Image 1 (cartoon, rainbow, N blue to C red):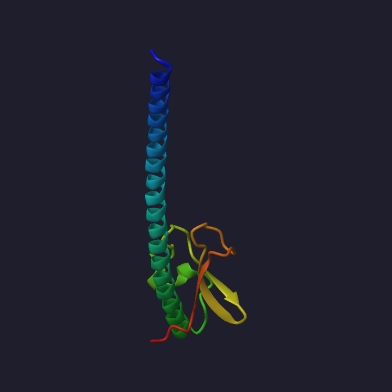
Image 2 (tube, one colour):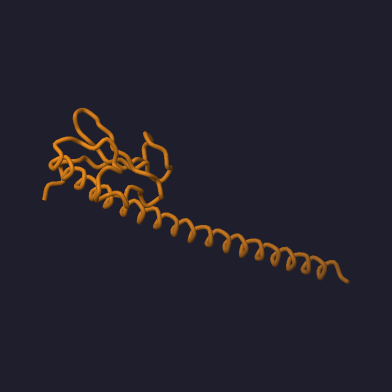
Length: 128
């Protein structure tokens, strides 16, 4: 085989290998991107659902306070929220008192309280 033909064959093989690597990487990164977008959308939906649940719980706690003239010690004491005291990540929500105000708090996506992703709703500011 001539030297020029052998060089051409090496170039064709190298380009084919390069194309396979690029195609495989492109497929992998696209798949990864689609998965990341899906996970981001699911997280957004869970946060929206949790915010609605926090608002509903805050309204129920406010009604409890008006009817009983005292705040509940725990969120589970409020009859309307007994079945909805978990956020959309499956974490149990709780009541917190701060500066004379009461908040219904979700630990957020990480499942840990007192972190930056906690979601809070103040009780009493939700009057309709």
